[in-house]
Image (tube, rainbow, N blue to C red):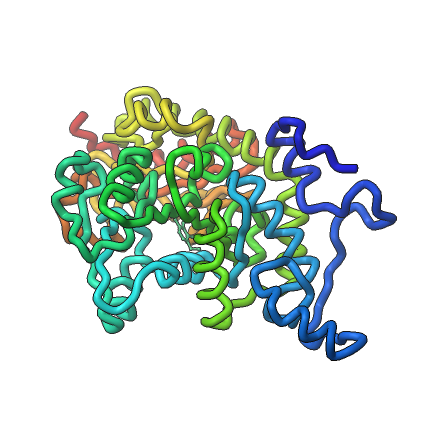
Length: 400
Ligand SMILES: *Cc1c(COP(=O)(O)O)cnc(C)c1O
């Protein structure tokens, strides 16, 4: 018998969640189940299963099979929710979550620091559907965000820290405000995986790009939408099924493998990330290190209050003396940090990001050229030596 009443630590949760019960004669990890047609022994049983769209039942391939169900349970356990819907990408998780609550004539509030493709959805398909978006500065005080709420506001969207610029948001405050105005709070919790427990802070619907740390090996695209009430589950589940969302069971199986080592990977990403960020903060070429876990960094107070740790993703702002070409040359000179988007894999990455940032509700918070790092599982001393090589390729022209 599983003893679900016992409090579990994260390392234990990711090792045991989503596995067959102890009473079952089974493989340790749920095997890969592929399939479209499900055969029923008789019509009566098939009819009985038609009403089970909200359950983890074998009804039809698109409604998920055992491999999906196992991953759903792992993600729900990590996020601290009750049910999770797996979809094909993180972007699909964002758009499905929004469409679960928004329709023609509705309004949503979205932080100006939101992940670029989320903004693209709001500005194109959502707008064409008659869903209006107002972008708010990510760190706007509660009272000022509240003034942007209208009677038609159904969703307050949040992402903390924000993509590229790492603004920290007061999620509990936003949740209170959203609920007071009759709206739901959707959080893109990809950065905060495990370290931020969304449902303890009033979030109604939490989105994960499982592509990142859950899969963890840069070889899978997946998204997950997690909720904590039956009403939220019904909205999300029915929207996902209506839109025809699905994820390959092969990818879910890989993500399940990845998830088993998530706790120790996240621990290593955090420690190495902080070490590299701290080292970078002592470099004269760097004007600011935007890592919420770093003492004195923007949003560190919120991080310290609400988070139990940090992943390996952060941004630096170069000193104003360095232009985009300098930062490109710096990135090109690195050998261990690969140049590329996405993150959460085992490898370190670097990406100059200034050119890909859009702001419509205010100016960029940092004047220098921005560069994002993902600190992987390499030895931090080797990564620091690599960064030293990158800086050496720049001629010294710091104004600091
Ligand atoms: C990567 C990312 C996504 C999208 O995930 P994909 O699986 O690449 O579609 C969504 N939100 C955030 C914050 C991300 O970093």
